[in-house]
Length: 206
View 1 (spheres, rainbow, N blue to C red):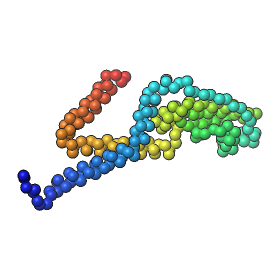
View 2: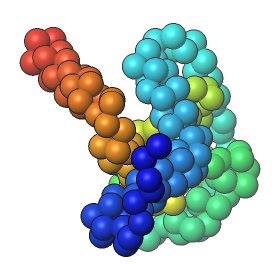
View 3: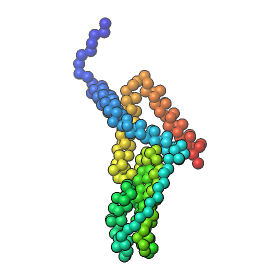
View 4: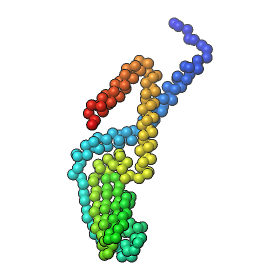
């Protein structure tokens, strides 16, 4: 039986052990925190790449109404009141993406994920026609994936998700260096995956 070796543990050994513990802890809990994010972007990556599967979900509705003339006449139409009336009367959501004024009409557009409305107001009569387009639940998810018309709050979610996924990838790669028996094969597989992606890009992407 080999006698136990007593004495202080070298600093390099301590540092390696502590690094392995911290990397494992970070990788585990960051993976759990980002599980929903990974699942969301994985599923919507598939639906986004095959949007034609869900093309029949588009629903278009038309409305008409009138605005008080004092809101639409003059050099400066009352934008706040016009927008508020449209939202209240027709349950419009999304952000105002365009408010265009010319001599004869006012054009107001709202956009949100998978959603859009376009309103044309006659400045001489006060009447308007509104077209609302709902592209379906999958289109909403696809637009959230891209961050399209989703606002600054959702843009922060995308940024935070990107940081989380980057940390998960880096801590996973770091853990590989502590698994001696699998380190070489793991690095070879990681490099092979990157090379395959590069070859597909060079060969098939126009």
